Figure 1: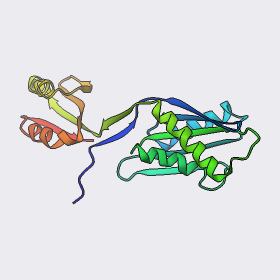
Figure 2: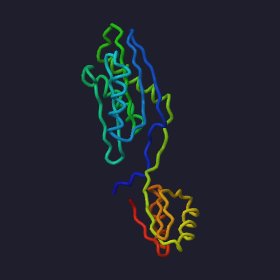
Figure 3: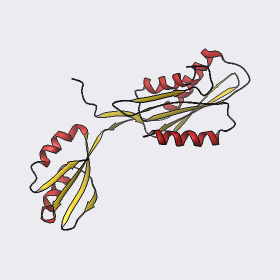
Length: 202
């Protein structure tokens, strides 16, 4: 039986890298992303910002199980740009990551081998200028309870070092909290022991 994934690696923030070869300049940009729409927005912005560049090649990975990934050569010879960029994302076992490499042509053809090296090296430079972080998968719970149960619910939140949000305190109360996936069974067991408190995972 395959072990359930409870964490993943990604980059902490935006960063840049640079590689030059025979007059061509390769500007690499790496972004933390969480959806295909976010990726599309970044790519659209870069097309405007670097409108005078010759190529904007990229690769991305999203999700945990399953993982989705794409690579794009943007007019460079097949598998000479997007794939070497994607290989760097895979090498560091990253997900929710987008790397774009902008090329300004310097007048000398680099050949397929030269291109693979340039896009790979530029992509790695951007990753090396970043911080790789471990993120935990989270589960969100919603609690519903009457006002008299307030004290036991807030004690439960405090004792388990949870952070409540979307809180409603009226005659009928509710709140939400997130818990790491690997703590889910333990928390759910404790939830079942609360009196007159309804809970659901959402």
